[in-house]
Length: 482
Image 1 (tube, rainbow, N blue to C red):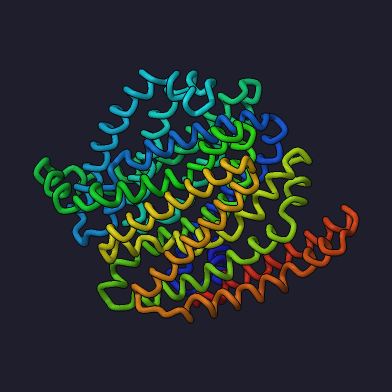
Image 2: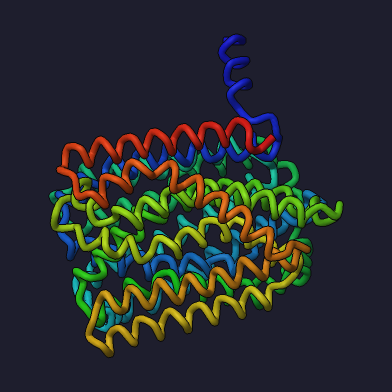
């Protein structure tokens, strides 16, 4: 056992920040492996309309869950004093219970009207799952932030695997139930891992949580009032903006269009989001201290450069061969989702390299700027899809949505780098270097796609590119974070 531990330590990066990222991302990657493995099966068990229903359900669930604790949970890693952080933990849980309970009233009273407005009447039968899922999601988010404060990254990694396992098991086993199984799996995935994180709090931190009094909770609510005042609206605009396409595509082009978008967005964003979340959690744990010590700018620049090298190869692969990849993996009927993926890839790349560092807004107390960005982003996305609907052209709506989102996130990245003392060179040089590496790594696939070789040879070219990218990632994990 000692020799095994020594071998593992030799493989892991020497840098403490990178080591934490690898531990957390390792669990995320295993969780994503489950999601990726079952996705081609799910697309054959469920219809495009079933996925469209789930897309609208996820939108409602996200809108309630993102404001469940009024964003007080986001402040948990910030205080130096543990009792103050514990007061925020208690406050977040109390607010979460109240908000989700209140949200359940209109959702159940007007479930038929809401479902009809969203052009998905079948959703009315499952509306009760929305507040339940939001409560579970909020519970996990709150406990997640406490674990981040405690730097308990290994337990967090295991919860990611629990979420993926429960979601996949329910969706596979319940296929005969139709769309209901998809929704139940989504709800289970939202709350998976909460039990183990709660048990950890009760076991290791109960003494400090138990010492919290009502006056401490009220004091925390006053001290961190900017979070519900500004961060809640920021998160709500962000969630509306990210979930808006599903609703608008369903309303303007039908549930099938929403289902195609959901698959494209889910396949693209999930792997990058999980790795990005791992880096973001570690970044959030270290950022307050880095700011106090005057090294926040250097940390931001280094994280951005590493994220660029991780995110660029998948983006290039999707730009080159998105439709063919989706047709091979998910079936020919999902080829259009690959076309969606080609348009969405640059936007999701920028989200991947930028979103892990958005806690800068909180660290620098720039909540108003964060809210302004989300309002602009939401407006651009809504206008883009509305323009596509006015032209009665689904692909135009997707293209305009992707281009507008890309421009907004690029501006956001530039703003964050400049706020931390980094110039344009800190954006351009790492991006060009990452692009050059990505072209080399994807060269077999680029050649096979451009030359229109037969399916067997194309699969070999895809496999060669995949192995090259994995080799590059292994090198980055070991050496680039030292």
